[in-house]
Length: 223
Image 1 (cartoon, one colour):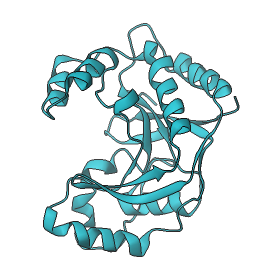
Image 2 (tube, rainbow, N blue to C red; image 1 turned 90 degrees about the vertical axis):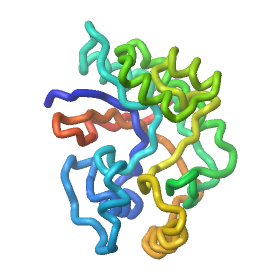
Image 3 (cartoon, rainbow, N blue to C red; image 1 turned 30 degrees about the vertical axis):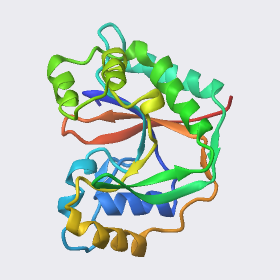
């Protein structure tokens, strides 16, 4: 399989939360296939943006492979990194409104999650091709702070390091008058959320030619 981009994600382990995420978004990132969504009016429309990525938490955002690097070398580097990173633990996950979006976010002490994400961004950056002007311009449309602009220039993404907020996306941008209804719909369908929340694996994922991401390999954190 030839991939246009790669990313390092957290993917929930096989179980109720993973199954819920695939059914909510209509795409199973683990198996790389479409799945029937919940029978909820409007669900297909509000999940169009996150669907192709699958149910995940971003650790290193999608990037194109730098010239001279290979997928095999990237895979080996992710494996090596996982071998020196210890698992991250916080109190749990909760349903959260992030601006006009809905997501699951962690709560409690988040230092461990931050540590894992920073290592993925920093230690694998030698594999990332520089962001093109079109991509930079698209990012800047969000109205970046001075610090976010500096992070974009250095790392190809403005929301890393101290600007990072780990989350598992559940929707695209929602209308203000529909937010409460979607929160209620999610609360009715979410499985029991993990308490504590343990991140003991990272996942190397690839963007297929059809634009959808799929799992390449999970790597257990054993440091």
